[in-house]
Image (cartoon, rainbow, N blue to C red; front, side, top):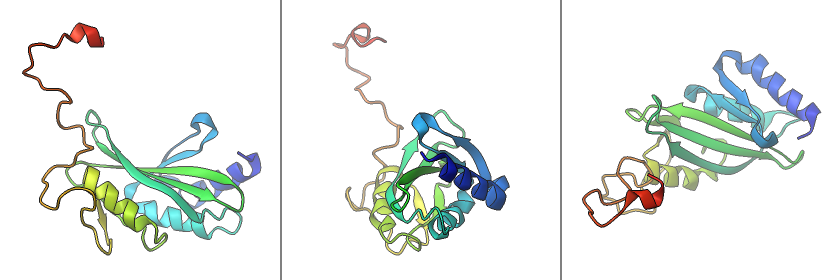
Length: 167
């Protein structure tokens, strides 16, 4: 990533949203910024409107489930500045008890379907979403299939040898 743009990005976020930035990492030269969940829309809007950065393309929006962590769900946004050809990853952690975060459909219309898919598979509720309902699974499904809440294998099988699988 261009060092000048990286400096502008980090400086503008720290000066504008200092206490709302939880952490900044750069694995594989991909800037990853973890923010407080209440500030996601403001931070993304700021990056969208910034005169030099112009992160105006939402590449992806998804979530992950970490069952051993206190805040078990993590929503991940990948933004791309087509003008500068740089990318940034924004993350926000959520409690599984109240997995709610504000919708990004006001900034990116394309977030609509990505948020619906994330809701359908992981149960993240995007507050303010215009039509948040299941799109991949049946409407009366009561679980979220991508959460790691159920064992992957049948626990009553007697014919499997765990030593064959490194356990």
